[in-house]
Length: 334
Ligand SMILES: NC(=O)c1ccc[n+]([C@@H]2O[C@H](COP(=O)([O-])OP(=O)(O)OC[C@H]3O[C@@H](n4cnc5c(N)ncnc54)[C@H](OP(=O)(O)O)[C@@H]3O)[C@@H](O)[C@H]2O)c1
Picture (cartoon, rainbow, N blue to C red):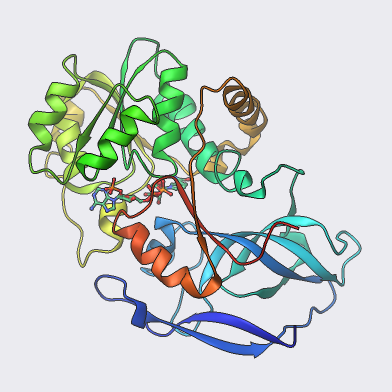
């Protein structure tokens, strides 16, 4: 390949993200220097967090106007100037929206040979590990308790509810639209799912959780978090995983019942980043593999074909288009 395709961020969004914020261009194929490797992207992870990176520095550097859009990806090494990696190796990297990218060899993590490779971005990747660590190690539910999760049809949420069920809990999802909610119950086996776009969230959630909420796994923040806080049981736990409702909005909104609800209900509200629990990944992956093998975890992936469709894939994710882990396929599995 003599030319490389790249998708750059033309302009940072001030409100909702739009296709005009991106531009695809051709550029020469990059050449690695000493200690570097050239990789070709196979699957790029499309995450709500990609939008948050455009708002400024978070747990990682911010995306700036003029950057080739940042992404986490699974890739194949095609040229190496470092003894630690050879062409053909499959790695996880902080990559860019492009066919090929040059990265520092020490930042490329070798991956186990799991097929299909997409499972390394979903159930055995960040989504599955985030769901597991957030629920098991932060929420710490006991069998019989009620676990509620928002963005329940999304990549993290769909595993949270299924893991809750595997641990003997009652799992209730919150998702957008009646069809999605029905799918969460019928396809993923949640006990119930309520529609946050239906205009009746408070009453619907109350009906789905007659004994109150013991663990709320929050992926969205905003008014959904506010509603869930009102229905928490005494000594409940709120797992703060993300705030999708705030990423593509102009200004922050709610919840208005903080710290009131935390005080009155003696809640523990705790944030986490999946890497915090890296030392427990082995145990997490063992459980995830076992539950998949036993048929207790349904793996759902939403793969959009083609680098050129990456902007639409991210915009659609923020609008709730996806079911399961969204990713963009740039090249076939080798
Ligand atoms: N802490 C960590 O280490 C970590 C790691 C990975 C991800 N995360 C976070 O986990 C959260 C979920 O990520 P994901 O990859 O699983 O994304 P995702 O759920 O696959 O996609 C986002 C979903 O959010 C929902 N949504 C969008 N706008 C909303 C709004 N205003 N109110 C309520 N829901 C809204 C949409 O579903 P509906 O149509 O159902 O509303 C959409 O499908 C994100 O906040 C992400 O940043 C955290």
